[in-house]
Length: 229
Image 1 (cartoon, one colour):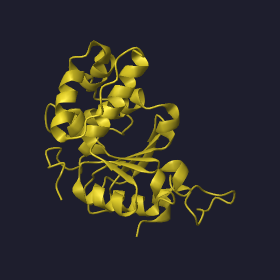
Image 2 (cartoon, one colour):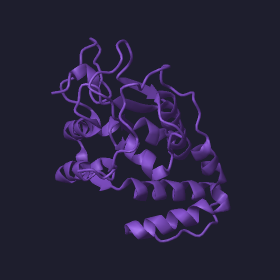
Image 3 (cartoon, one colour):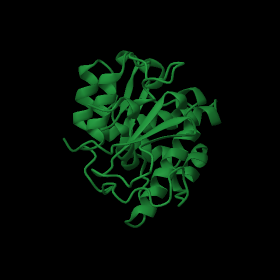
Image 4 (tube, rainbow, N blue to C red):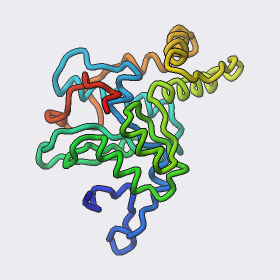
């Protein structure tokens, strides 16, 4: 079982500074994102292997989320990244950046295990959306009657929402339903002039971000299969 202190975003402290017995997950867990899985879907990849490049890729993804999600949505968003069995000492396992809660799966087998536990801890699973193309995570979400959505489809959805904010008069295409439709839709989106703001964010891999220098030496390789069962 996870230590209560590691799930403070799910179980806020009361006036005495102790963790409440009943997590207020409906407020804190409306959206759970499988971080590296979404990185593959968005197409943000580190140009070279190594911790600094992984840190840049994560930072770019968080910038993308901050630019496309509303402030209210960001407050209800939890992003989970994989980590090795032992993270560097003295560095955080959980941070809050741009109103989003970021978890690393230190102490867990992998991010899947942590996400499964977050799903189980959610007191309002029917109001929860879980973003991942990983079949194991999708099964865990559906078992609790939460919405499970492929990373590619969710990415298409939020990009379309952003386009409509930038250009309200733009025609709204039918929501893609199959993987092939999602791929065609994304290709169309990438050539859409209204998407330049998002494209700039996606391509803006930066070495800086909310993570301490050197934080990621134990993280897994980005090249793992995002749909690995």
